[in-house]
Every structure is written in structure tokens, then in C-alpha cells.
Length: 296
Ligand SMILES: Cc1cc2nc3c(=O)[nH]c(=O)nc-3n(C[C@H](O)[C@H](O)[C@H](O)COP(=O)(O)OP(=O)(O)OC[C@H]3O[C@@H](n4cnc5c(N)ncnc54)[C@H](O)[C@@H]3O)c2cc1C
Ligand code: FES
Image (spheres, rainbow, N blue to C red):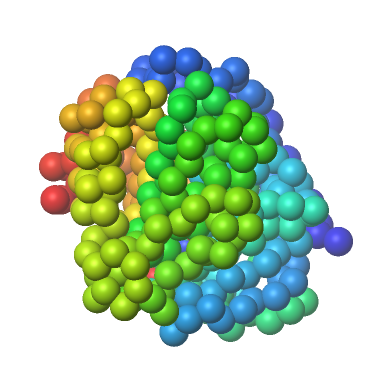
């Protein structure tokens, strides 16, 4: 069993006074919980050259997690790397969470060496997740590369609502070996369209270009878009959505320190002021983001 080391009760970030950009219909406020646990590794499976899926026993985090929230994991045993690393909660069920991750450096390299039975100091669930609205008739879920990680729980929540919405899942990657999570969305009964940059399967080109083509024939005004991936992709999805008047939420990545809103290490400038990605985000209304500020 995981050892619960601390429990902090906090107000949901939706209540932050600066967060004034909201969809027309706001979901009701909830009181969130954050836990620090020694999460036991149940498995750590290699999915492709650089991608892994780690399953962790973390019952309190699993129970409290919402789509788009993240866990902050201490990847190594010592002080190198000093800081925890943030990862989206890919799945939460029956006392465990799954994290999909890509090895890009020291922290993720150490994570890839974890074996069944190891323990990981984990904080979560953190941040503000997606606001899933039952009111929209058409929903696009758009993931690029490892950006698919937080989107499975979005799809799960939408299908659980059972409002009969028309859901289109678009997944993009460089090539077919790097497509992640297709089967999982299909098991929810959703149709998935793939885009690969090299054309090895599905649409040839960027997933944002596929999105652009698909929305040409979209006549409904009641459209929501939930997206995660590289910033350049998110910017394009956000701009296309704004032109068409779609409600669009994006999950951003930023290097993080505390992950708790205290150090200001993850701050970006938004239209309504400075925003901490770990606290007011990582999911934002796309209209709130000043994309030029993100170095694009
Ligand atoms: C809210 C949030 C959720 C996230 N969810 C996930 C997730 O579900 N799965 C996942 O794999 N990653 C996710 N990330 C990114 C992940 O946190 C970083 O990849 C990780 O911190 C890198 O740590 P590292 O020590 O391995 O690399 P570092 O040593 O910190 O960096 C090594 C090199 O990789 C570069 N780098 C760092 N991050 C990335 C990146 N995301 N993509 C490409 N290059 C990068 C650095 O600039 C540097 O050059 C998320 C980030 C945030 C903020
Ligand atoms: S990482 Fe410390 S405020 Fe966001």
C-alpha cells in the first residue's frame, strides 16, 4: 500500500480571481485534494523507441484526478535532478494511475529504469484540468505526439456523460510507430483519425492541417476542441478555433519548479495577467494565451 505522507486541502484553481476567461456554461466548483505519496511501480512498459507507460499504485491521487491534471514525480533517488518532473495523468482507475512519457533527458531517463516494486515520491493531482461541457454537440480531441497523454481522460469523461455528442479524435505523430493511444480511444467506441508527417499511415502531414481540413465541412456552431501537443500545433489549433468561434482548451507544458503555485517558475503572460501554468493551468482557454510570448 502506498504511504500517504501529507494531505493538503485547497480551493480549486477555477476560483482564482485572475481566471476570468470561462466558457458560457461553467461546471460547478469543486474542492480539490492533493496528496504526496510513495507510489509503487506496478509496471513500466516500453511502447516505442522513446515512449513508456508507467503504472503506479496511488489510490488517493487516482480517486481525486480529473482530466488534464498532472502528477509531480521525483524521478531520482538523490538531488540530481533536484526538481520533480511533471507528467499528465493519462488514466486513473481502481487505485492506480498511468503515465505516458517520452524520454528526453535525465529525469525521464531515470524514470525509464524503474522496475515493478520501486517507489516514486509523487505529488498530485495538481493543476486545473479540462472543463468538459455536456452542452457542445460536436467535439474534437486533437493530440500531437506525447500530447495524447491527458486526452484519454477527456474522451472517457465525454463518453461517460453519454450525451450522444459527435466526437472526433485526431492523433498526430512523425510516423506510424510513434502513434500512441489509438486503441484506447477506439475501445471507448470513438473513431480515431491519424496524421503522420511522413505519411506512413493515415493523413500525410501535420495533425493541425488535418484539423483545418475537417472543420471546413463543420456547420455546427456548438463545437468544443480539447488539445495537447507541441506549442506550434496548439497555436494553430487555437487560431483556427477562434476564427470559427469554437470553444477551445489547450494543455500547455512549461518547465516547472514547485508545481504548487509558489515559486513562479512556470509563469506565462496571459490576456488577463500573469498565469502560473501549474496552478491556473496547465489547461487554459486558448483565447487566454499570448502565443507570441511563448516564443513562436
Ligand atoms: C503539465 C505538464 C504535463 C506534462 N505531461 C507529460 C507527459 O504526460 N508525458 C511526457 O513525456 N512529458 C510530459 N511533460 C513534459 C515533461 O515534464 C518533461 O519532458 C520532463 O520534465 C523532462 O525532464 P527530463 O529531466 O527528462 O529532461 P530535462 O533534462 O529537463 O531536459 C532535457 C532536454 O529535453 C528538453 N525537453 C524538456 N521537456 C521536453 C519536452 N516536453 N519535449 C521535448 N523536449 C523537452 C529540454 O529542453 C532539454 O533540452 C509535461 C510537462 C508539463 C508541464
Ligand atoms: S512551478 Fe512553481 S509556481 Fe508553477
